[in-house]
Image 1 (tube, rainbow, N blue to C red):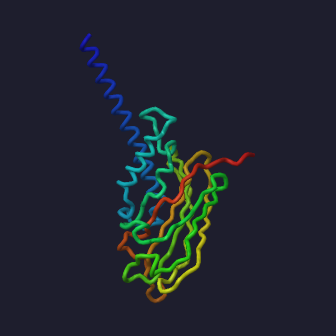
Image 2 (image 1 turned 90 degrees about the horizontal axis):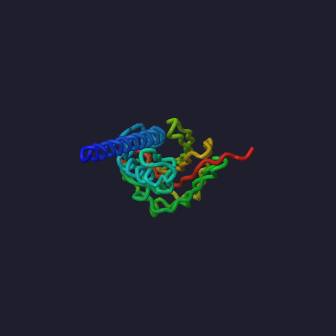
Length: 224
């Protein structure tokens, strides 16, 4: 009888381990999909995205999944708002180089998103790089289907803005295809550039574009 009890405990432990591995596998797949989506936005450099920090944050989200049992929990069924404010790209964060408050929102039915950049005073609002001559802002909207390992993405950039001048408020509208019930994420970032002979070169000292998740939502199919 004692041997049977021990065997049952061992089987339960093995089952829990397998369930944990399955969840972790889905977690890594979700991380990889977000990385693939954002890499061209940040820069063609796999090191520019802090994958370790992203895995930890997505793990927190996965643990909030109340729809599935342990071993079947997913990122997309968790509390996506935990991703808001998370820094994803660059060696520095958006908040480390900017003292401005950015606003944005997502319409889960239409896929229309927007980011508002307040009036810019570069000498006061930005911690610029020494060689930089311009700054550029970016808004990226993306919808993810983690189960099918697919995503839809759309990106909008601002003009190159001189760091020697003040600039009025900027609106960055961006639209993405809605996937019913699937995560909709709005990312926002900025990068510093050096203008040489009329060409703009992205500074890589910060790892490319500094990017953060500004807003999250879920796609809502419009009633037919």
